[in-house]
Image (cartoon, rainbow, N blue to C red):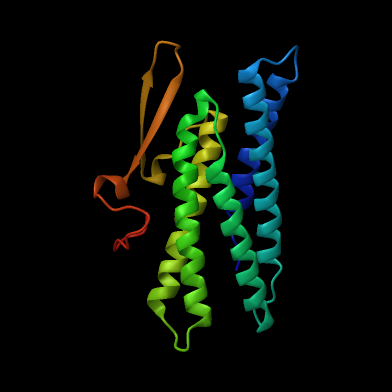
Length: 196
């Protein structure tokens, strides 16, 4: 049950939050700075939660049947935390994070539902297992993309994501993410044949 990429994702988010907190720490705070500080605090809390959840999942004993109940409880909690992430109001310079947070939450909810169906079903369903893993992976990828956006990093080409950049009147760089799902018209609620 190892999730090797989760710690690098959380490190990326932690760096972004630390940088934002540092920038906020100087002088009096206007409304924009307060919004950024609130956003940074919430992202930091989410990052800490993901680290803790990753540790809990990796600490489960897969040979113990009781670990299934523990795993489902952790996943239910993750679903709630991802829903809270989707509710965060992002400052102007991070507006595109909101869309990714919404997508991450949708995919995590679908993953948790599929994991429940898989583990609680009377018969083994390879389709449920595959769907659960696919949606979980999609949710975590969106968290990773959020980390890239918050740190100003580039998403590696192998991530199968295209970034479009525009500069508005305030010279704020906006990044729109467009991956295969959007190109072929599928969304988080559909079950495409390939994993993105």
